[in-house]
Image (cartoon, rainbow, N blue to C red):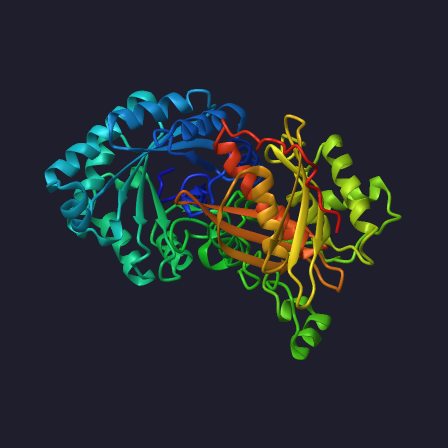
Length: 529
């Protein structure tokens, strides 16, 4: 069956490659494996695991995912350079099913100002890149970077050449989010009319969201013959992001009567996967985000509520259960048992082993003693933000906060004292003052760990409802020009902020293997407040 005739849309997830390129969204190897496992359970067709030639860390990540994740096709990006292609092939060698994804810019702007290449050179390089990749891998994809701003006739020449060279998938990206649906559909129509052999390959689309039309443009391309959509969880990615996986999947499913196409995604895994990626990257999902936002299935208007009580379809076009959101929200309490807790965790879409369940249940009991009511969001926060899903149950880095004491008041100088434990067993006590309790806590953490950071942004949101709701804090910091995000959760928002800042400190420490804890002072600097 040709790429244009099949009735199924291939979902190509690039969260681990294009998504990770968003500022502050870099992931550790363990975090990438967790996301890759979630994508496998989500049943995406292709996982673009990274850009193997970009760095040794990227190579290791692609190789680890190729080794440990079976089911989806594992893909690595590569420029049309021999070294890039060789590195991609080496990293993908352990994969059961692999793909090398080569790309080269084709637009006049890129040819003139970035590549300094004539049209003939572009075609030659593209062909050579595909041919070399085919020597290592039967499944080769070619992307014409900035295709939407490329002259249609020249783009057709490039596409024809790479098809002849052996590309099995040809991607037509809207790299800058510049096009509009009607124009983009016309471009696909032009290529289908003017490129010999195009019916023998899979046409793909990769859209960015600079003008807020990534999903609309992707769906327009599907209507015009594309049968692979490249997208990311929560739409994360460079600049304004990518086409949102959950949005395009649910559009194709909800409007199946219009598109007449199928997707193989297990949609009940969409919500937990969204939450996982949000937690790891520290990028909150906006409340009004389509499909997975907190307000996506919330109804406050009296008219809407009345309609919902009579029949859900009056004001809902999707069932929340279909994307992994439970109807029941108020759950469990401090007297609930482990079995009930495990069942609730499974209903929320998380698959935890016995050790992880025990760790999460212990945290649940601690929180239940502090809160009157427990909600699904509380359980999610425990699982996502306390290291339960981490392979290293000791935390996400070398530092652990043992104690935090805060003193603050109107007209008083805020002070904070922390007791920290390093992975080598050393205990460090430090204290500091600040303009407020949060700044005092951050300064105390910096003094204790020896890591000084430039705070750029502090975000606070409620994980659930009620006066005793947990606060989720995300901090964005700069360290030597590199952006990092950290995440923390607690019923005490100052503690949540301190945990978020510590999360960033641990991320920085992981990138500095030679980092040592500061020398312990001779006197005890613990401040009892």
